[in-house]
Image (cartoon, rainbow, N blue to C red):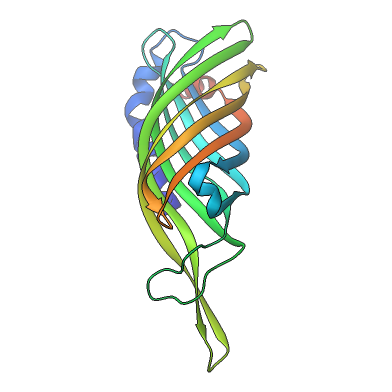
Length: 209
């Protein structure tokens, strides 16, 4: 599933890399890798609690200004405290682990001031959230574990701050993610906060030209 979500990113890089390298701007192409936590909001906190999360993405410069395209895969992890059992199951899962595989494609704008940069973005996408299930066989004293795939569309908007350290930028980013489908008959809303690094891939691509 991870590979299926990353495929659109790879195709996107292939299509736009040539045009990106022709631009005259200092932030033509960055990769993005972040770590942090996604904090459930509202009804989501009834069944999810934050755990360690990661995110992967790209910043692709558009034109000669500050616009950029921002595809990102969110691999958030949550503690799952199930409220009602899924259809065909009797027991609820407590302190289980749920994981998101969500792809968001956003349009952003970056303003560079000396070594600092400030940016905002908004976009939409979708993917799946895996939640655990457990079937108990009382006669054999066996528990069968499985995952339920919860498909949903998302909208995400946010912003961040970057600091240039030469060939890469350190960043702090916060966003709000809204899910258009429900889990456990409740809305999915979360606030991801991450820190990480954005290596400048433009220099590498220039060497390959």
